Image 1: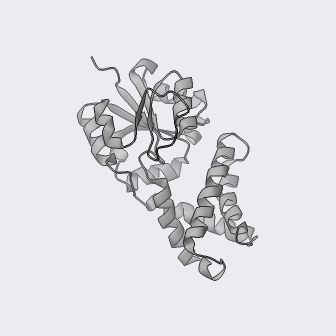
Image 2: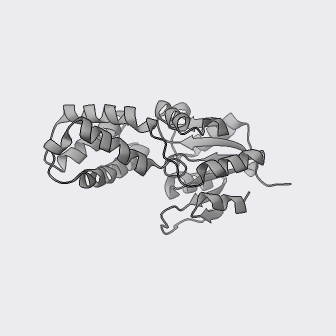
Image 3: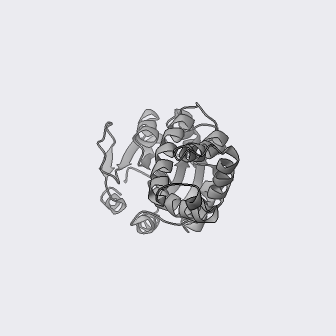
Length: 232
């Protein structure tokens, strides 16, 4: 008998290529709002600053220091401040437009569709556990045409908790009617996905796309999604 029946995936940075999709979305708003007239330097610098502040503020959001609305516009606010633009109205307008465009992008990591199809054919039941926003994440998987692979999508909004909190994993297991022993968590974030899964008692797979040093002890480590075929 196989060990696992339920596979829980993270979405952003694991299956859905957030950085690439964010870049294309930022290019769109950069042109739409004619930011090249306001910002000194090339777009790539603007993009790099955005990624920097987005990462910091996501960590603050996950740790409960700011709420979702603050996260959404403050990452734009902080990015613009790097270019000496202190415009809250513009920041909020950029944020709103960015969140409209972002989920329409459909860039996935290599082998995403192939591995999901492989697991579906092997009769695994697949779900998503994501700290992203409900409406945004739903749009992402629909526009990427991978929504039909997942039985449940558990978000921080629907569960009223966030990875790595134990509660979101317990909520997901209950929603999926799955036991810990037959379930495994797959994700790229060592804190949210791997530590969270381990603390919840689940086996884990660290998807190490960027070859970062592993500070935890996941059950498995892969660097490419097609390596999951060696596990399942």
